[in-house]
Every structure is written in structure tokens, then in C-alpha cells.
Length: 188
Image (cartoon, rainbow, N blue to C red; front, side):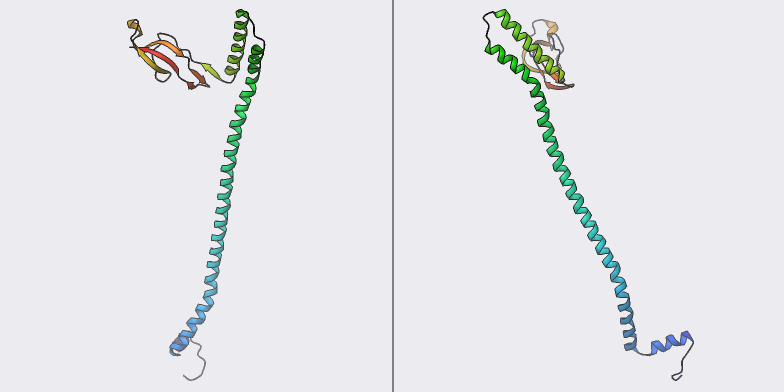
């Protein structure tokens, strides 16, 4: 076979293989050069996608951090405003005390009536805010969930053993949550 063209594909493959290792190396280099741009395109696309995801992550992290700071600030404002609301409602009671102090009376009955009015006004204001006095009476069973025993004394009667003998300070609940336990004396 001279320089004639061969139309048979198997023969062409054999001729290509017989051209030598240098020709095969050149063909392999050409093939890899053509494939390299195609291979680098997915790598570049992957790099861009990774950069996009990283950017989204950083933005989301910053947004969450801002949300956390904003909710902390709003919570502090809410607490301050809630206490301001209660204090504003207490001002009329303070005004009543100021008037009673500014105009003292020699009559004990008038003073007692004024104190009773102020006491009633204050109690109504606190009850309107959700405060409720816990009912604890002598002879009630001692309950550690409701009472704080400040001392134990010998029971005056056998039926008061393990029960409330005296209430030193009443307990209070705010919206069914105990604010202060009732301080009681328990009989032994």
C-alpha cells in the first residue's frame, strides 16, 4: 500500500497506529487540549455556584444576626414599656398618699378611712393587673407548692400537726403563677 487512500475504516485505524508513538502523542495532546476547555467549564460553573451559595449563606447569617439583635431590643423595649404602664397606673395612688400626708388630720377615724380608701384603690389596681391574693387559713394542710414554712412550732392542738398554725405573710399569684409564697408557721 503506497500513498493511495484507503476507504476501509479498519485499515485507516491500523495506518494511524503505525504512524509511530510521536504521532499518537500529538493526537492525544490535541484531544486533551480540546477536552480541557470543556472540562474547565464545569469546574468554573461549579466554582461560581459555590461562590453564590457562600454569598447566600453570608447574607442569611447576617439577616439572622440582625433579627436576633432586633428581637432582643424589642423585648427590652416591651419590658420597659410594660413596667411604665403599671407605674403610670400607680401614680393616682401615690397622689392620694401625697394628699393625705400634706393634710394630716388629728382625727384617727378620718385618717383610718383615708388609709382604707387608698388601700382599696391600690388593691383594685393590682387585681386589674392580674394579681390575686392566695387564700391560706389556719388549719389548712401545709403544701410546699404554695407555702413557705418560716418556722415549726409544737401544735397547739393535735389536729394542727402538719398544718398551718399561723399565716405571717399572704402569698400572691399573678395570672396563676406564684409571685410570692405564703409565709406560714407549721405545727409539729
